[in-house]
Length: 177
Length: 177
DNA sequence: TTGTACATGTAATTGGTTACATGATTAC
DNA sequence: GTAATCATGTAACCAATTACATGTACAA
Image (cartoon, rainbow over all chains, first blue to last red):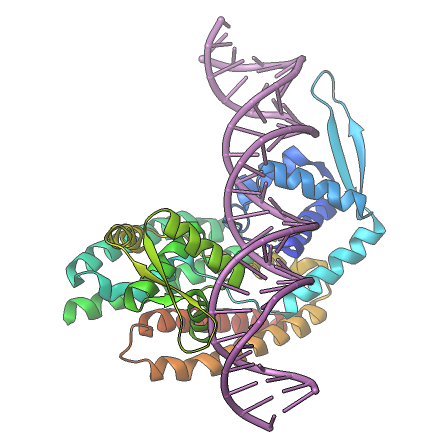
């Protein structure tokens, strides 16, 4: 599922990263996968294509580099036009509210299709998965206390906690009934 | 962006609705737009194509109906195979946890690219939008207290509230600093 | 020498959206 | 008579994913 970002979201992300450090596609995608996978998943060919589109539109420039005998790199740098475009995207992004979609929520609409104890067993699995995710991300928030990634990580964890609390409440009510 | 649901999510939703009431595509999409827009947005041609795929795979059957002189309807009904498929999709959906993607969160990663007071002004807009959404949905939760839609609406509102609280906290901290 | 990391790219397929086309009915 | 609702469907376009292709460097 193409989640994480639409066209504008992708541009915002790619340009924002290029603004900090000019890099080549491979490194960019590598960084996204390592550190921002929870924010956006951008497959390699998609990123390459999008970088090319940004170049075509004048938002970035490319320069081929070669270090020793390693494969050549196409290093992208943001242009003044790209800066302006980025700033507009950022302003739009910050001021609007596009509610998140919860792909998992669809099942909640059909809870009455399964016997209650099966529902409970399944949702306890889900709860465990949320708790595992929390255990993974809570330490990261602490680590990134003073870095640019802090707000976005904190926001993510807050939603994980909201999900955890909501689901625990649902289970309590179901067991009580 | 294809949000709301991937292929499996779509099937789950369409089959679940057809399980309750056999209907035709137009009515189905109409219902989704009226009552479940926050859950999934499914464009008409997409829904028609997906219903055809479900038919091709034997999960539903179609029968053409005509009421008076109105345009013919292709009324879909779920098959036993479709029921089984639905149950599997539902079990998978309930037990897994696929974290939501927050398209708006990307901007949070670049807060330091704009002067703090502009960030605050923009985020106050966002906060107002969240509050408007809350005002719209909180009454709905109360209305649907005893209907199938209750959990999914409640879940949605809980996340809206988490978002509101988080953003208000961020603004307080920014103003304090 | 076998596999993994580095680095880019193309081609085939799939799937979604937009816009277009049709035509009857009902309400103003 | 003109606009909105009902009802389906097609065609053109775009975008994303998967799989494939290439080649060096380095580590086990």
